[in-house]
Amino acid sequence: MTSTQVRAPQAEAGRTRPPRGSRRPGSTRWRRIITPLLIVALWEGASRAGILPPEKLSAPSDVLAAGWRLAADGTLWRHLLDSLTRAVIGLAIGGGLGLALGSVAGLLRLGDDLVDPPVQMARMLPHLGLVPLLLIWVGIGEPLKISLVALGAFFPIYLNTYSGIRNIDERLVEAARTCGLSAPARLFHVVLPGALPSLFLGLRLAFGAGWLSLVVGEQVNAQSGLGFMMMEAREFAQTDVVVLGLLIYAMLGLLSDLALRTAEGRALAWRRGLKAS
Amino acid sequence: MAARPQGELSHPTAADTAADTAADTAADAVVSAVGIVRRFGDAVVLDGVDLRIRRGEVVALLGASGSGKSTLLRVLAGLDSEADGEVSTNGRTAVVFQEHRLLPWKRVAGNIALGLRGPGVPQRTAAALAEVGLADRGRAWPSELSGGQAQRVALARALVREPDFLLLDEPFAALDALNRLRMQALFFRLRGEHDFAALLVTHDVNEALLLADRTLVLEDGRIAEDNPVTLPHPRAQDDPGFGALRRHLLTRLRVPTSPDQS
Image 1: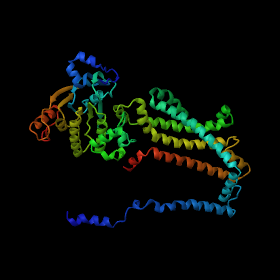
Image 2: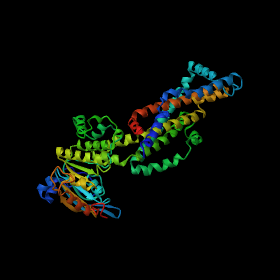
Image 3: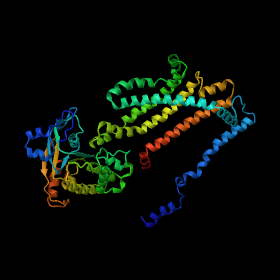
Image 4: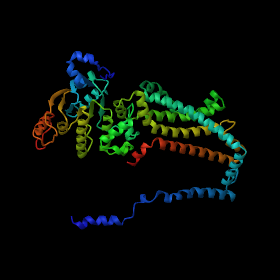
């Protein structure tokens, strides 16, 4: 092999452009907002031109105006507060039960044998399909909405708690034992942090399922809440309020996910090193 | 005497041991094991192992792969609750595994301090890190360390417990050849400073002869050979007498002593 043959590819490599990834990520991010803005503009234009009749779909500006009006007279906040209360109580009950039973089944062999089979069977029931039964059992009041949210939140939390505990590296638990850690200390220093990534995943899924259950629950004979506000508006063909309700549901979902991801980023800072390597 | 509740293994108190054996040797041993039997299903992996390690003594445990070296180490470390026999340890023990087994969610310093109590834990942690040459890495996550560094941290985590008896399960086997030599030198230096006894499970005959005061060969579930290594320190592989011991051990392990011989 001669020296020119060795040098040739190097010279070529010097001429090639820097790889795409080396460009600053922020420089082209603005492009991502173009299509959403375009869609909203088209929607507004179509409404103004009379192509979209307001009784089918209101213009974005009308939706904003409806939001302003309902926020000003307090109606929006009352419904939002009712919805949030149901979501928080339901998530707390369903999530708490899921965490407790998932831990019992994940940590104890007896718990696994006794708890897991019925939960796995119940998991196959579509919980929103339980609405007729729940109506008979708990009536049409608050317990119905809260039960639905709790049912929606329970399964993701249970399943991810269980698998998070089960997938912990047994060798780490053993190493902690040789460091003299008692069983409660191993639970705190090894099992809990080891299961945390899985727990966060369960929580995010639970939030999603919880919001979905809330929408369904509030559209079944409610007296308040965002779903009720939308169903009531439907009767008067106020599509601006219906779309407003949808937007608020979406924003609630977005905000809760953002909050959760921020918390996750802080709690799981140690994983950043793993991703980089 | 640290007695661990452990399956069918009985842990006699100091008084019992003294009654069984000569009192002077009992006080001298950091670990003594009598009649260790361990079965996995029908397979008998350990078939009556007797072992005694004196204070400050480094013992290398050799054996073919699958001979039960690691199983024996786990029994001595109190990690195996299904073995039969009698183990008594005298003083603190610590374990270094083949993999570093650091908790990925704790920084290096947090890993070393795991389970430590009492005053001065940060100072003790920092001192242990400095001893393994990683004084500036206490804030790092384990995932940011190289393999050799992680194993040094694992060694520091064991040392900070000031063990009387250190169990090492092929601790340098996963490292590259150069790192392995560095770790062996580090181990020898630390042993001189701390004067712990150690059981070094290894499949590396050279490592055993460089570091150990005594070599054991595990075969068919029993200690088949127990030889002192009388070579003077500092040892090197080209010392007179080293080659003869090496050939003897390799032959005992049924390994060809040179690639020409097969």
